[in-house]
Length: 353
Image (tube, rainbow, N blue to C red):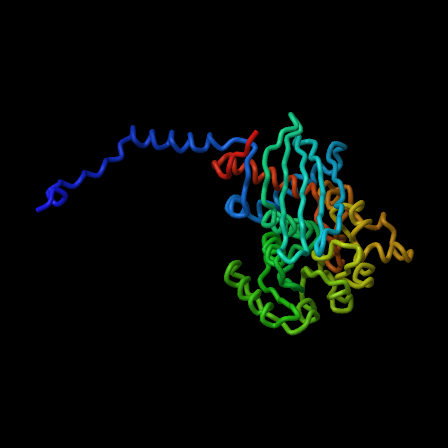
């Protein structure tokens, strides 16, 4: 028999209180080694936060909307090859934060998204965050918050036009703020709408069905989402029933329009993230202002709804509309939550200081 065969088996070490304390100290030490500035990946973001977290932080953010130290810089775009470089920045004064979001989209290699978060106390970089998942949750959260503020409380049915990469978080956010029991989904591609309906059932546990037309998706809906890149309207006013709330969430460029003029004009509340950015990017509003059928003072900001400066829905028959653009201030606020969670949990990688 070999020596190895004769060697007695090592006894398993008992976990004593002292060893448990040592393990705890080691874990704490590992967390302590993660220091700002940190780098967070898409997987880190996905594991740290949810769309419900994003809705809560946006509500906190917009409660400070009137603070003069809260500043949002509208998006700037530069054509780069077959794609577009986008840059947007903001300062959340009451939280002593500022930051920027930079992303490239439209090229053959797909999008690239990053947020840089800084402390206004010392000007130091706190985190660099891969921001595709961050952006999807933040965009969904804006629609979720608008739904919370404007949709009828008894809203139960949701209609969705569009099934692209931003669509699922839109649905998840609306379902987080209203007791949605049924979702109707339309995409021009039958396979895409069928797959999306199955995903809603599987991940949200809510009844969902693919339908053959955009009109069928929205005609009985209490809440509607359009989440497309269409240059021409995909939603018509005569498809909508009284009392519906509409989130127009896909088009954030002046050349795109997801809803027709009559949808905007039928709405008793017309909201957006920020009027200054809408004046550059909200084609549905810009068209009507240009022809004198709408004035910019007819458009209210999400922050004014949160603070009560602007009135929301007046009655159950009102049609309300939120034109979502996505602003840097939302990215910065959500990035701060992600950063704080990462420090608490020892997630991410330290960067050179």
